[in-house]
Image (tube, rainbow, N blue to C red; front, top):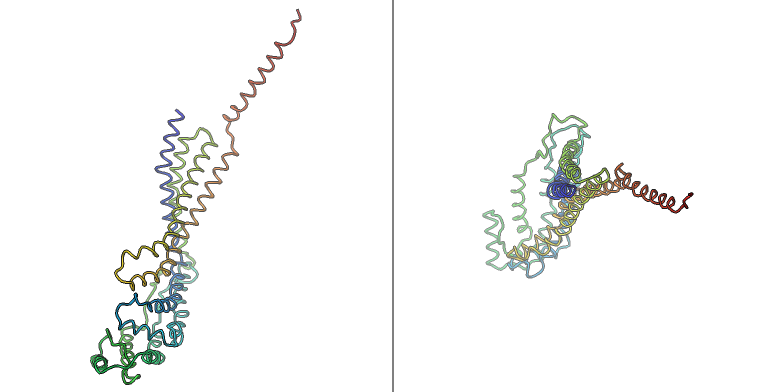
Length: 371
């Protein structure tokens, strides 16, 4: 009978309880990551700060001959790299970096405060006027002139193409990598194209819609996460059911429960750690089979660092929660050795009593008969 109960309890734990606790850990961990104010407010800032360095790194890598097949495009990239101004320096000079660090960052910080209930809920409007002003900055024209200086002079055919672009005001695609007769005239073609693009940018954009029903001091993210913790009732029920069927005592019940909890946490922890470690490896090697050009591979490889930031934010809460579940399992399992049921006490005492009775009987039998 005991063997049958243990088999049934084991089946419930292995095929129901452990998969359930694994699924709940991942559900709660990912939910905690996504709805956290840090994910919604700090992650965009972290990515934004990496973009300028990402562009400069891309330009460095694009110098390789096997990256850009088109000769004309390669000449443009080489000219850009020959200038004394990096892309990051340009963004700093025209004020875009300042806009990133102040206007944009403050907007995301306010979103985080609203979600934590630190400030009243409101619509957050992102002011794009400083960005539009930066895109019209004179330093952009000077930067374009620096690039044109690094190019060879245009021949007659190439010069006619430049003139056609100036007249037709088309987007400069396949523009010859050469320097027209006048640097300012050549730079003005790019500048005019920038100005036309800036016109389409609105002055403000609503990046967060205020919700009047959310009261001040109400932490939305924490509330959602707290509600998801209720889901742990499901694996607790199945672990308890399996342990109750398989166990023969209180200490046995705790051992079954602790072992099941520990195994579920360890499986989740192992897979989460593996996923966090395998993503960089997969991104490094898998792209060779999916892209047609070296440029596509390079873009995928360089954007990988940005993707890893997102993966880290998503997986870390799962790893943390898995570790907590493992600790709980170890504690429950350890407690089982501190609890002794009455049956176990009786079982330990009975052999001792039997031994004492046998010894007494032997002593009596050894005494000489008084008769």
